[in-house]
Image (cartoon, rainbow, N blue to C red; front, side, top):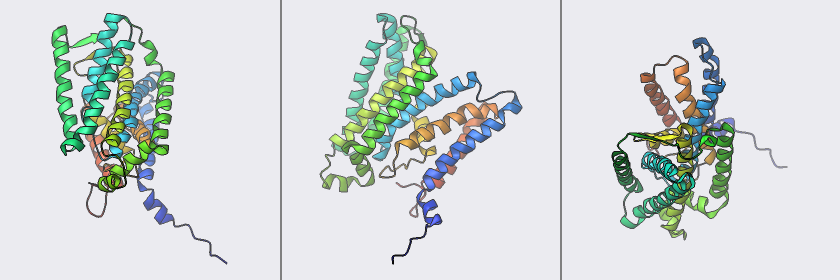
Length: 326
């Protein structure tokens, strides 16, 4: 007779430490921000706060879900904030001129795809870290945005020539997020695109020697991310119906923090999951909206988030060879 293998609880916990820490952190945040805010006269689950929470979640989540492809390869894109700011500005300006949001969205998509191709191919062709090209684009995009606002003679523009209120609907936000999650999950888990991206993150040399095209499968993930960035830019613009020279500032760090809070390994590889992006985005947004509700001064919220970020990194990314995987 064959012996029944006993369930090793310790081994299971060790193998799923990242997921347990990420989901546990989200549950703890929900409990804390449900219990404590009423003592300060506000409720996180009121209609007004839910609207603010959803608007924060949707942009961060749309960006983070697309960024899973990039991070799974062990790469980062620092130009995200600049892209969101420029695309939101283009959509507003062209919406006022044409009376429709479609031309601005299409132009933004073209620009995003071009940036994705360059960011994806540059590292392999020039033998540099892909993050360097994204930093260059960040500077270029911020410069273009400054030129646009200097030409307009203002620091912000309001959309008045086209209808945008539909993008403030929580239902539409949730539907778009679910659709993007399903599409990206399918591409990431059931196609060569996602499997090859994870293989590149796990071991670039082995991936190339196994026949994975080094440029094609570095560019395609950036193109998926480009589409997600444009979608996020539309909702970022739509929530306020405006754009300014500071729109998108810090989004690249928000995405990074959200992914880490979700348990995403910085080095990418086979442990990368799309669900980690959604969990991290909700946790990050709960901290953004919930900390002021429990009496934490606005100037201290960054400190609290930094401490939580460090703790999660130490729990989820620690290895015997050092704190971070790479």
